[in-house]
Image 1 (spheres, rainbow, N blue to C red):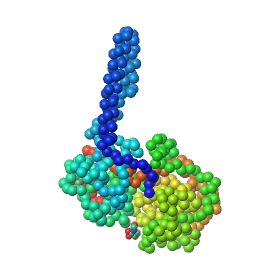
Image 2: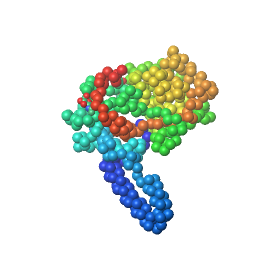
Image 3: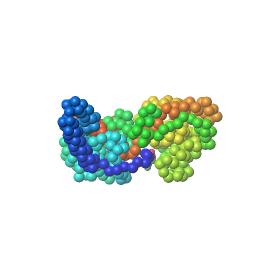
Length: 386
Ligand SMILES: *[C@@H]1O[C@H](CO)[C@@H](O)[C@H](O)[C@H]1NC(C)=O
Ligand SMILES: *[C@@H]1O[C@H](CO)[C@@H](O)[C@H](O)[C@H]1NC(C)=O
């Protein structure tokens, strides 16, 4: 999951660096003025010319106070628990995402000073980790962080009236960051974005002659899941290559699913459970590989918030599984029709947020924006299950 990134611990050093910058700024200002004075002795003409010229230089090169906002605008975000207990170094939000004035820390001793605390659901629900102590510092916000679907989000009712902000894949979260999103090509080419965006390319000859038809990667196989029923039906009509712990073994590594899928026309991007906005990296792996995703999840309209309508094939588009299978076979033999599902690619890049560094930095930025508001999350369970 996610893109390899070289993270550095954020924190105090950035503050001191910024202060040092200010100091250099003021001494540079002094030098400028000294030069102005020295010049003005030489001649009246020279002085006025030099004055205006150097004043101009001073204005251009001195730091603009409005560009370096005051330190009280700085946000300290405490990471209460590393998601799933997996320790990861905290990122430098400025370096990676150009989000400034954010201090991330996982040091509990910072609790009294933290503007916000971000708390990952799973470890709290399973009681591996306790909530932070009450009473909480005045104005501190608690953020509920969860990227699992409601089916895999146990004991939500324990957490009513606890949080101030939600962060999840749901578009109506207070802090929304999906598993992936498209960036139009023009915007993706600029600096920062390009680091975590992957350029897609329009269809080439080989895309119409891929050696295999349909792949499915599945790690948690459960007879009660809609996707397993779909598989049983679909494999009566077409051949499906199954990978993952329930099928053939897959080479380890982030990029391997994408490599594998480059050999396939279609990929079954079937979510483990069907819920509002729950669209995971399964979809984006297919998109990256240029395999047309066949999706089972929320309704078509949800997917269309993320992709052009022709970029995926929705299981609900067909009255029967057999019709779906006929459609896939038809596309394989009909490049002109398949092209409709691939042509959009040339205009976009895919951004895959880095778990969890990008989430923390995005949250930090959101905390600054909502600073003056006091609010609690109402009906967390009811909302998340809706
Ligand atoms: C696998 O799926 C079942 C049924 O959906 C669920 O109860 C279980 O928690 C899942 N296991 C994991 C590891 O996600
Ligand atoms: C956060 O939520 C709690 C619980 O609802 C509430 O008591 C507290 O005043 C809220 N704080 C802020 C800063 O919104």
